[in-house]
Image (cartoon, rainbow, N blue to C red):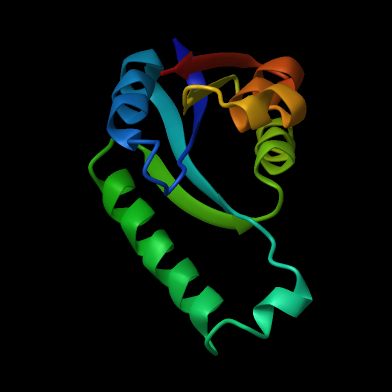
Length: 135
């Protein structure tokens, strides 16, 4: 059983977090903790000028609220939204917070993943801890 489990949550149509959260519950020790983490991609300054005023802040608040609701249904869990490059930020957060298991969903790889690599593949290759990937 793991004491500090990280569950990266992607808010897109390819990923449903329910299964990853259920796996995390099973893998977490009774006195362990779960962190539900969403990484908001950084938006270039030039692109921000095309977004409605306050859009990023409103999005962050909505995502934070959703993660808090999901975390409230779990024992000793928190939700967190941070900004950065998804793969790199997940890895950095896991290392900085002594995570001992990352539970994440993965999508079916497309051709671009073979050239660039998916977030899950990057995390698996470079994680400082165990990684449980589910399709």
